[in-house]
Length: 165
Image 1 (cartoon, rainbow, N blue to C red):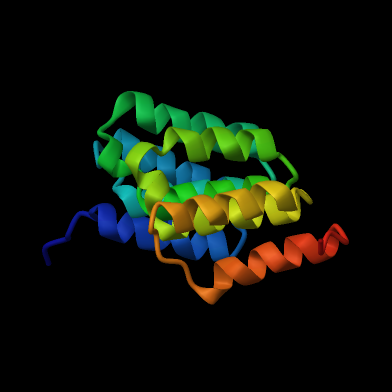
Image 2: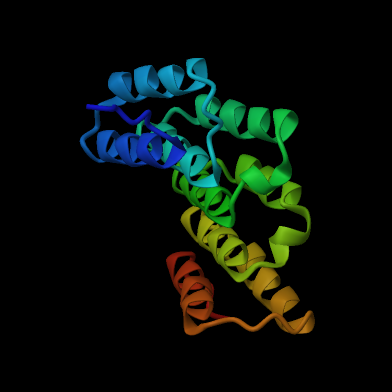
């Protein structure tokens, strides 16, 4: 019987399952095995690993991993979802300066609605409704369509800060 070597899709699926099962150490072992076998992670693999670091509140590790991807590989390896999960996670952790750093580093991707929405949400979590509102108005001025979600995030941020003037 002939065996089939796992590819990036199989490894990513395994990493995702381990993340859901909160098997952090085993995830690191599988990720390392993947690298040793010369299998290059794809955008989804990177996102799964970033989400795992965020799930564990390992912000330094998440940021180091994110910036190492940017330094070593093609920017296309970072999916919009990677930016979104990192910005959202940093916002929830009340690390708005770092969230803004990731947002600003997104370049032309910062005009993508999911990334903009994540940044508005980060401002909400960090109780910075003025910045959330300003970003929404920039979206409007730049004719970037937004959904009711973004409006609701801004309204929620304003309500949390008792700022309905």
